[in-house]
Amino acid sequence: MTSPIKTKPASLYTADYYLWLKETVAQLKAGDFDNLDVENLIEEIESLGRSEKQAIASYLMRLCEHLLKIKYWDTEREYCLRGWQREVMNFRLHIQEILEVSPSLTSFVQEIFIKQYRNGRKLFLSASGVNAHLIPEAPEFTLEQALDQNWLPWPPDANSEGSVS
Image (cartoon, rainbow, N blue to C red):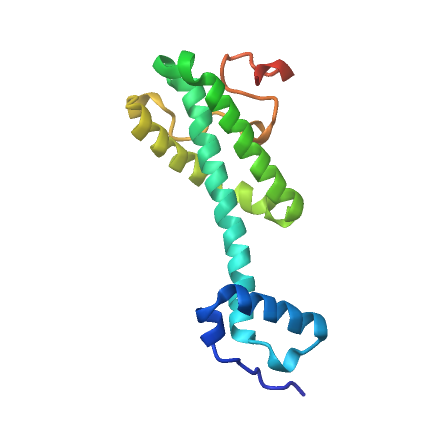
């Protein structure tokens, strides 16, 4: 026999989110399940999963954008390469951290790779003004290469550890 879900008035949730959070944690720790604001708790837990997916999608899109900058934005490479490499490392580290905490998102990353490459391509084209016909619509690098801390698309033989500075 299941007990009906009791819903605490949402006023605390909407009036003082942090206090609602503290009280909910205290109730969970104390085993006070009868007084939990279950509806909002469920909503918050679901949003955590969405947030992780949104974050990893954003990092992957920006990673692809910067890999394209490194490979194709010849006129800015001399001045910006070091910064782009740093951003690539930053995005890779963020993705790695999320996947370490939530390894089940690995399949999600594989599913969205092509879409996020295309989104990154759009950002790159908008920023660079490079002719869209010169930039492949499908990635010329694999997801594994994109996430590899030691790989960069330029120079063409940049597959050694020393390629990222």
